[in-house]
Each structure stands twice: as C-alpha cells, then as structure tokens.
Image (cartoon, rainbow, N blue to C red; front, side):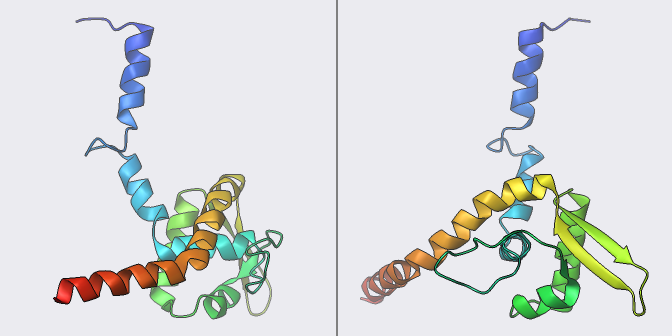
Length: 148
C-alpha cells in the first residue's frame, strides 16, 4: 500500500471540492444556493424582511415567522417554501425555533454560516434589480435578431 505525503493529501482534499469536477459534492450545494427561493429567503431573513428601499437589503437580520416569509415571497407555494426552509436548515444556514404558544409559533433565523452567505446573495439580488432594464433590452435585441 502506497503512502501519500501531506502535500498529496492536501491536493486530494482540494480536488475533492473542485466544482468543475462532475462528482464534486460542492455542485449540489451550488445548485441549492443558486435557487431563486434560497436567494430571496436569505435576503428576507438577512434584511429583516424590510420592503425594498434605496438601501436595498440593508436592514438588520432578524427571525421571521413562516407566514411572514410566505407573504413577503410573492409567488412561492407552501410546498416550495417548506422544502426550501428544510433544506436550508439541514445545511446549517438557518435555524428553526418552535415556541410552545397557542397556537405554536415557529420562527426562522440565519445562522452565522447563513449570514456569511447572505452577504454575497444580497449583492446578487441587488445586481439583478439594478441591471434588469439592461438585460431586458439585450433580450429584446437578441430576440429581434433571432427572428430575422
């Protein structure tokens, strides 16, 4: 049995998490976090769910109830919101807290790991909102050229 050096072990570990490699587990994580609902949930929890303002998602992170998230995320189905929240909890990006009230109160909040991802996702959401007019114009130009 051949032994590997410390440098070889580090190289193997690095290759294990190379998203350009088809079998890399980080691809599943990238798939998860690139989902629009994940982006919007992280933005909502990270900005306190405040409505769009000149500052973008500059509010303070806070916990939110399921119903608050559901109202804020127009168009998300109950099933999709539930599945997305569960997957984020499983990945350690959010915590779910159940309070024994009548009725039971369930809140969701970003973890430290979730807050670190929120910082990047906030920029992505802001970029999409800022550049949407340009993208729409390019799409229209492209589609007109494609039709001819």
